[in-house]
Length: 276
Image 1 (spheres, one colour):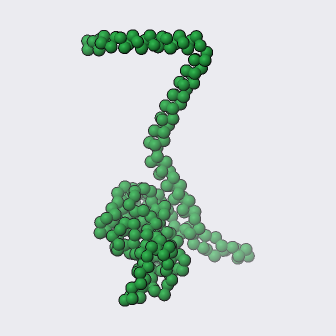
Image 2 (cartoon, helix red, strand yellow):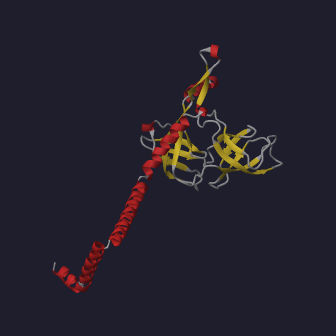
Image 3 (tube, helix red, strand yellow):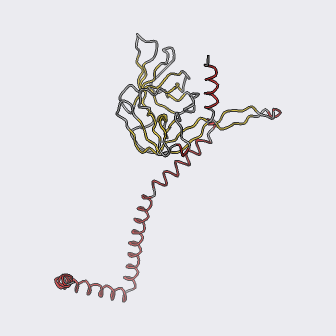
């Protein structure tokens, strides 16, 4: 307390000046309507600016929740797309109509950890078996495929990234329908290769690669990449195609887990067919 009094005594002249200035300012406003209105306007502007700053801070703090809400909304919209439904013959043939039943379900998730420059890269997502996640579910982003779920825990799962040489996804040229496999053999997280596409298939720079579907992982027609180079290797019967991936795998954000609701039936039938 003694130090406080000493400090106030040292700045007594400054304090006296501030008190006299406040009194003069108050008398000026009290005796002049124009000055009073200007002061009120300035005060309102300052208060409005403070409220705006507070609103901006609150909005920024709530971006995570807002992003999660939008991701859930996007997943719901994805499930309503026609590509997620398989045609079913109409029961009322008099109308020659068809209906569709849901083929794929989507679940929003967030990437909490990922690698891009290892020999085999993975992603860790914040959804696990408690949310219905199972191995071999596809993972897609806003612009293309991301990977396939391999390990699942109660609250998290780990997916093999597209940047894994062992993950060979079935793809096809959107323009011609010729199909092959996507293989990450470039060492670059932005590019990959399309292999096993026969040389008789016309391929040009700028062609789009999409998922072929039917593998129980990804729906058909999901963007994969754009052809950037086609190399003619005389010793091979297949094109050597370089692809720029449409999904940026070097960033973390929201993704969507895809579940094929018909996969169990298909796998069961294929297993019976292949049994001796």
